[in-house]
Length: 280
Length: 225
Image 1 (spheres, each protein chain N blue to C red):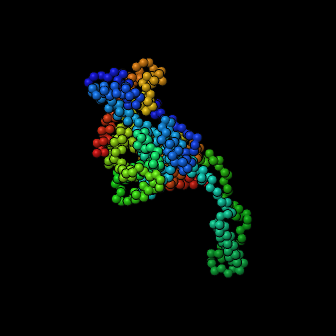
Image 2: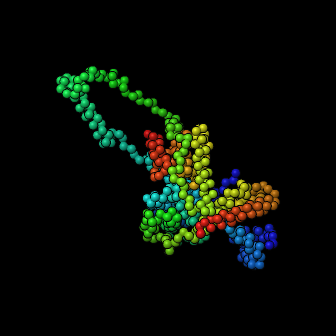
Image 3: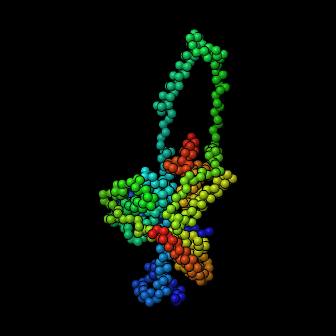
């Protein structure tokens, strides 16, 4: 088969891009009908062009989807912040609880008082108890747990990240089922899963070394491009911890919210607890 | 290292989400614009689609990861339909169109998962969800199976795998030449290289890409059939 000239290559590109005038197009098509090598090359170029076009759509779709999800998360955050929280004194359940406590204390005090004064109680324990004297304020004050001083938000985020961090990611409870792909493309999918799990393990190592930024970059890639399943989910969890370690609380909270809402997520319960602690 | 150059996006002055409700035609025109694509309009569409689709998909046990993949696949097909002229802003709303694509893809996904027998989905009501009185999906589209797109799926997978094996500079050339339509001589200038550099690079990149593309494409087709 004859070698094509540079001009013919350019013509193919122009033809496929629709950049030829009607006369040029007619001329090229006439040449095409007679030249087998040109026909072959046109087919190859068409195939490449189509593949690259679809690839570009995929990239665009991924970027647009990520942007939409970011906006949705931000909107959810705004709604949560904007939702008016009723002050404690306006919550009936709290009033009821307070009333119950007061009532219990009153009853306790009454029986305690009666028992000490009249000795009507038949309970031997009370009778033999040597501490029948009323407790003085100084007695009780010593038992009150001191109120901890408020911890700065940044320190708190890091401490929570440390508290929830486990250097060993959870194992995949169910073997990934890839029956359809196992025939021809098993290596690709298995390789993708292996790559994701390796990335999660590497991410945990980086987190253990307090290299949050490096861990974030690695885990973000897995979250965005990883194979759907256990390891991508694990990457999400560790990414939230990386954000916390890096004091990016709002980003961490956004991911935790998503995990907490995802039934079957391997870290759903942890995410719920951590998110609750973060919002305290 | 070269990463695929994203096409430029534009954020128009008109709020597309407002136009979504008040002026569907304007919204649609914003959406079908290509070079640059109107990012705000697309974001608005994706948010609507996600909101509509996710509640059904989750209730039938589809994982969030699968939902994300299905939506992205639907967007790819919608972009392709815009490019090919299959979708035009006449007669039906974009959300109905892309929603129908999404449900079709979900149906295909269910078939693959072989779960359709265990948890039956009321497809008709789902199609109606994306439909409305003035603008539903194109006639016959609701029954359209996802099979014709399997071939494109193989093409895309093959292209991605082949593309990933290229060197950074080869990737750059392929993207600029085939996606952004840059001439090889312009590529040479952009890279500040001498005459013939673009053609040689293209020759090698194309040869490698074509070989791998064909191999991956055949693999994909053989296990799908």
